[in-house]
Length: 242
Image 1 (cartoon, rainbow, N blue to C red):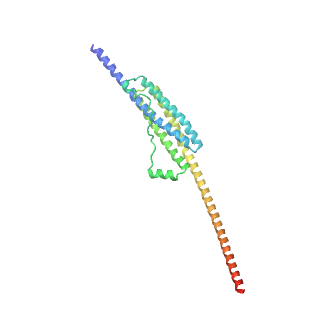
Image 2: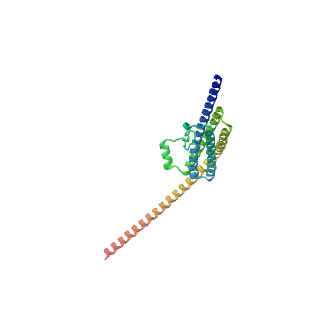
Image 3: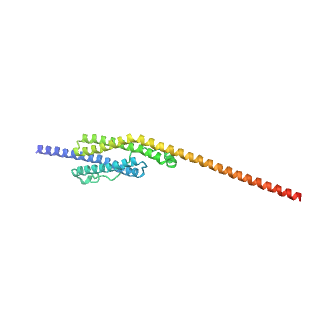
């Protein structure tokens, strides 16, 4: 009788541990999903506002990948939830629709206001491309840490495989950004300098033309005054002679 109770106690304890590990895994997967939800929102905005065709295509391609990453995470959460069904945990073990806050640096308000007021589209694109890379690097760290944690928990191979697939895609996009960002930023800044030079030349040309026109108008006024003076003198002389 005692042995039977002991075996039942051990079995219950083992089941509780398995349940706890699954819940912990689901929490971790939902955390990753909340970041991917936020990433989709950012990528949609970036793709719509990007002024560089090459970058826009890359963002759109990664947006498609990120939606696939969301789906992988949802599938694994649902699979684990099916084996950890408990009414008290119902909300906690469903795929989240919330979005986490991405680790994008927030500049001082004065700097942000200055950029909004005088910054050009090219400057904003360079700035956002830096933020793109920061987000991807952060996601790489998140997935690496998540995989290590799940391996320690003894998570199933399908769940770990799903995270590894997401990690590979994030690493590939981060490498692409790291490779292309300097080249694209240089190109954008050259274009801006060239455009600025053209504007200065146009401004100088316009100013010079205006000065010539004003000088011409001045000469015409002087000639008109001289003519008037001459006519006045002639009239006075004629009147005196008469």
